[in-house]
Image (cartoon, rainbow over all chains, first blue to last red; front, side, top):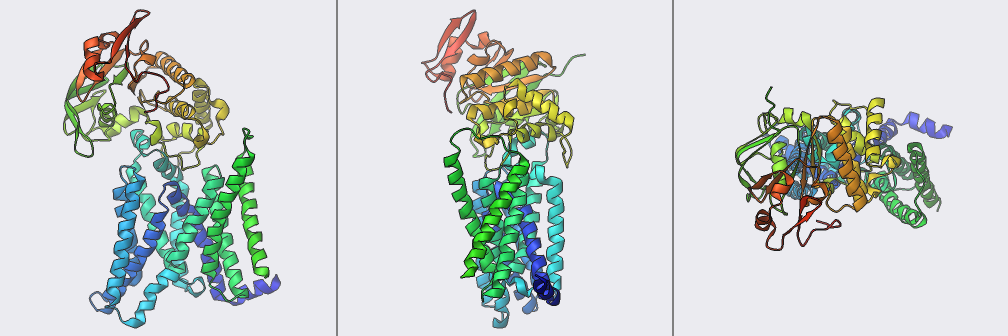
Length: 316
Length: 267
């Protein structure tokens, strides 16, 4: 134990990676949860890939000398917000299907832009674009962490303030508007802030892991946990445990921590589906009332099970 | 003091989002307060009329006013007075809401963020659930309830909320007899004990026939308006529901029977 702490104290890149793991778990809990409630989990993928297209544009503008001050991260943020706004516009009527289509179209468009621009970017900078796809949590610098931390804090604050509104928009958009809530504003707020957080998380850990961490824990928790607060808490736990196990594993075996984290998150979802099936089979008779704290304990136990399974798997 | 009418439409025309005309040449006036029903077959523009006066859809032509407030210019003022029960299938079941969360929504939507529930909110919400005999399911997940139970919870949400006008879109469709009776009784009691108006969209007037004061019969325009028995006219009914519609007199009231009449209808 002391050795591990010693190791962490001595290696700043490890400190940054651990901090990033916590921050990304916060983003997943605050944003992934509501995207899954909204039936919009695909938007996490759309935004992450839009960030890639935006980066390509940023590099192109910078490198061609057209707009030398243009930092590629600005391109990533701009594209993500555009995707969120476009998705929000398509879904103003409250129809999820329309938003899914909008995400699909913008996904395709931004990837096409990225591929198109790659021909005009000097080859030595192309890996920077692909970095957005794979990412490496162990290679983050201080600025990455500061940016990620500030959006995570912003996102966390907004979610604390407006989680009821986000839930109401998802549950009953029409009713919320009729009762006098400005549902349209909250609809856009939720999508755009999520998009900013996802874009920065993408820079940190890559589009594929962002998608896995944003969606799988939320989907898993939503199968099992029966209160909004319980789901948020459980998403945080599952996301954090997956990432920490990923990081730890990468020290024992030569493997990408992101890959392990993504696989674990996905497995958590499969496990949740399985638990739900077993539970449904057992509880044929009306089940007893459960309190919120019971659910939290259950969630915690479920995440421990996942953890144990993982530990078990690296033993051999 | 001359009270403003509850609803006043002048030459109103509204289009569906696909451009088709849903309502045309609609002009009528309903006094306030009232327990009114908007009836008509499927696709006759009942829900569209509600959405128009709630300001959810802009009229294509003409105006509609609620208590004297224009649906376009004063939608904010209208929404302060409104408690709305949408069609049941408009409620998304992917969010793990409990019965209490849904009912409290009626109260919290009228507050400002962060919308914390006070002990008064909780008491009023429990009382509202009591009215529809659902208070024992306070902690039950909403998506696990039956259709009729969910509808009762939504009615309780409206009863718990604040505002002088209750608007219900098809609250009785696809519900069991028990739920129907509970909802109708709760609304009747609430209307009599409080100074509120109730506007209910339904395609079956019979369960609420003896309670409603005014009926608006629609088929893309106003076909009839008035007391329930005067609207239940054989000629009017045939015009709207086709030649199979029959009027039955029972206990001094006239009821309309159509082929699809029945309580366990699911549409």
